[in-house]
Image (cartoon, rainbow, N blue to C red; front, side, top):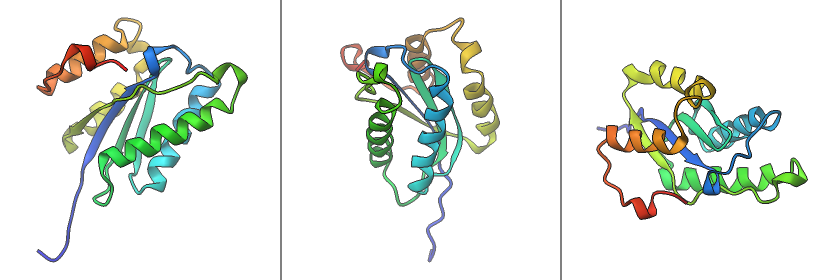
Length: 150
C-alpha cells in the first residue's frame, strides 16, 4: 500500500491534580477552546471538548504522525501554564500525571459528543472517580488502584 490512511477517534480524559475543583466559568470555556487549539496545532482535529470543574474530556482525531503520549504532554503542559496566567487564584493549578484514552468507533462519535456535551448534568449524579472507573471497566483496562489517581 503506497499511502498511510488513518481515522483514529480518541476520547481522552484527565483531571486536575487531586481532582481539585478549579475549572469554573468564565475560564471553563476559555480552557476548552485553548485545549482545542493545541490539538489543532498538532494536527489532531478537535471534535468536542468539555468537562466539569475538576476534569476535561477531549474527543479528537489523532493524527497518524503524532503519538498519543506526545499529544497529551503538549496539551497538559501548555494548558496548565496558560491557565495559571488567567487569575492569581489559579497559581496552584496542575493536571494529574496520567490520563485515560479510549478509541471510539466512528458509529459512536455522536454518542461521545453528546456525552461530553452533557458533563455538567452527568456530574450531578456521578463523580469523576466513578465515571473514570466505569470507563476502565467498559474498555476492560486493568489498573492498580494505588496508581489510578494523580
